[in-house]
Image (cartoon, rainbow, N blue to C red; front, side, top):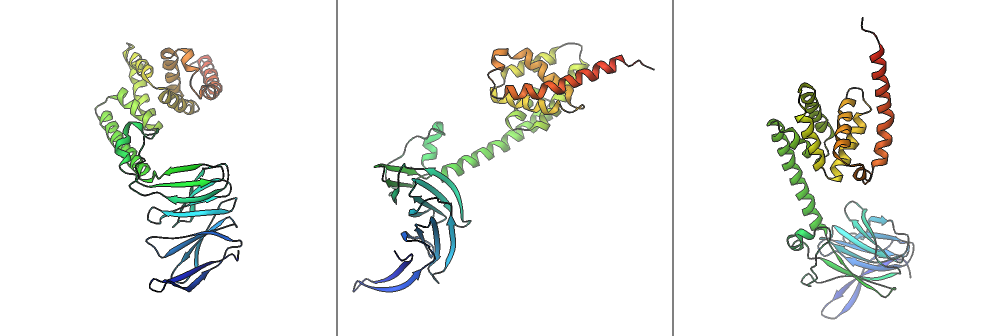
Amino acid sequence: MDKTAKLWHINLKTMELANAGILSGHKRGVWCARFSKNLQLVATCSGDCTIKIFSLLDKSCIKTLEGHQFAVLSILFIENSSKLISVDGGGILRLWNVKKGICECVEEGHNEKIWSLRELPNDINLQQKSEDIEEETDDFNKLSDSYWITGAADGLLTIWRDNTKIMKALTQKEATKKITDQQTLSNLLQQNHLFEALLYTLDLDLPFQCLKILQRLSSDIVATSENDQLQKLINIIKRLSKIQLSALLGYSTQWNTNSRTYSVAQLVLNCVLRAIPPEDLIELPNIENIVQRFLPYSLRHQERIKISEKVPLI
């Protein structure tokens, strides 16, 4: 191999070939070349583990994509040539952003060299449920109609699905839900529905808002001779999912480090210990870290209170 790719003009009448230029720059032999369907670009891949993108206008190399550890054996433009897929001799598949020149995804596709990479027809019937979004598969399947197939030395043919549109739709949906939830939280705070608002701060990961709500509840609990508010808070904590409970305890460990907010952290800890059985607390994934962070500062606060109680009033 002479480490170059050659362009040819084809006379469709006489079926004769004429040299149209040479694409050079690779340090080892070129394994594959692909033309963009809608841009004046051609991409080449080589045994030097790189991919080069050339302009068809002046045959210059405008971008080199690096990251493969093995010879790059095949490439394919997708997503209107905004993305490029490459496969190598180590069985690795990479997805590239052509404009930015960066690798966006790496997948281990095969156990041996991937010799071939091809796009499948858009009308092929390969729709199937996605485990991640199973409950909304029918809607999201309509968004994706792009598949490709790889063949490797391990004797396997693997069909890949382009989920770019699905992921964009999911991201948009999550963003819309977040805006809606934030508006709901704002409405609940205006209506003084603090317990319901507390749940939204945990779901939206808003520790400062959560602290403000608990400070208001703490003031109400101290000011009220009855324990209705305290019992309501305990009941709310009983309803928390493991994720919400972990978030609340995580916030509290941080509040416990500050003398201005430690009382709220101790209130949370008190309610959690009343609401959640020990065997359920042990099941929390980060409970050991929570205990380790709570204990030293709680002991400091206890010692400070004892000292203040011993100081005589003047």
